[in-house]
Image (cartoon, rainbow, N blue to C red; front, side, top):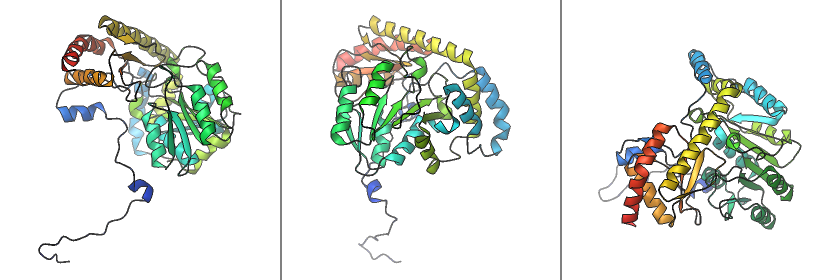
Length: 380
């Protein structure tokens, strides 16, 4: 086709679906790699993504190395051995557990399974943004409930679910981004308070680092509860993307209608099996995380800041000002090669969040935090 001078050609293009056409291009979390590329500042301390810098079990590393030559072969699409091990670990049936590409991938599948365009979905205002991303992607209507201090407000969440006729509610216990937790009794009462037709998505990513009595007893007879756990935190396998969900066999069976059956790769399955079997390393890692939380809290107090109690692998710190001041602290740390994150919702945004890490990285935090605070105060 010839284009006449002064005219531009209108080239037909495949249209997006009406729903997708309305969505912005979004990455829920900007990674430290992207920040380093944009700024040109080398990363010195990676303490913002709630990974475990303490690393995986040496037995996991050995198992992955031994399995690497078999990477030419597709993974088991049924994830049979891993699901059998998880079922034994949880004391449930294999048909009551599904494995997938981290909690993030499983959340997307859960939303796709149960949420139609226009359905009401309840979450806390400032809670995990990747869940919100999936709800928007499938046309759900999000209703945000403000936190009550540092805790998700269970009563308000249940009330909002009843008021809206919600199809789904999201709760993280322990909580991200605040690090708080509810005892098991409060969570069980919350489940009971929800309408039976409303599915609770209970994110227990930080369950291994929580105090005893935080996680409710496992009861897969509940018809409206899906619980999600991961190998990304205490087990130190965030880079391999392995998570699992468990609950009523009818709910779990729904994943077989839509999941990516080759989504959980061969080395990931091997790593998860080895990690699940190494109880000693898990105990060591949980202890190391607790010690690192204590040191982060000490560093915060030494600089006049207030650390919040944490049941997770990070510590949320009140900077004592407003959200703009906390953002300045975040930016000043980034200028010094220290990657952390912060809550963004009103009421939470005066905080910053720092991941547990080995002493070598916390030494850098101890060096740079007072510098960042002075610079932020001078710029504020």
